Length: 336
Image (cartoon, rainbow, N blue to C red; front, side, top):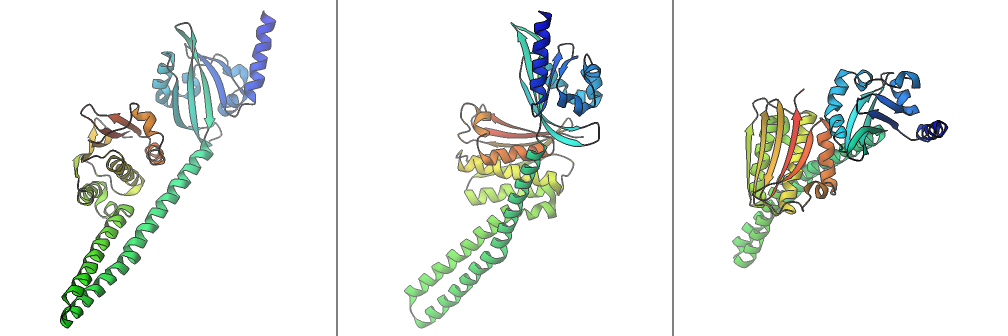
């Protein structure tokens, strides 16, 4: 029997040593019982040093404290998945996706398996794609504001001049057509400006996040004929920068989804600071997601980008079905 177990252990070691990631096993006492080659290399340990080591000692108190909620959840029998930035013993920083998989025997949890994948390249690609999308938005907004909008405005002025000339000739019917063209051109110019403002959030630079969200809610109300309020309970100011831009873009996506896909007529955007936690909430009275809000939300590209933006600053993004109907998109970030 001992020989058989030894053979099985050697087989598992050989197999996992060639897997593209860290594979390990921790007992319910949080001591290492197995670690593949990548796991050992990552933490700069050999097999003897690793065997029986406490997780607290391997990870260090700071990292262990961050992982602790996931550890206890795994020991309660729940599969865990989370992303984490880790620093190797050589000082290299990598982005990782960690899985904790409970080891159950009957109803008893004996420990949990760990699978950690290096997703640094994927995260870099995601960042590049979002940066490209942001740049495309800015370029399109600039084009609408500086070129197309100005050309349509010029057409409107010409139509007004034509209206006056035709009126002077006594052709009232033709003058009405020219006036209609001028009015439509003016309306198109306003639409171009509104689109440009959404693509180029000027308010972020001039008034910060609070002013930008206030202006955005007013613009939504005027453009779509819905009720959109902004409520702020956040005393400090989130000005410019990557954090403000990402929060603003999340609010934009949530509101657009609520109106276009959920048929919402009343929306509330709120920003609050509660017990050291910054919270951005977008509530609507639309039809909401299907029965499983999280599963439905994860399908769309826009939602995936929202999730990426939240991950950028260590926030959690939730899609909640409201008891009174509609959906709440909630972003929470603990202040460091």
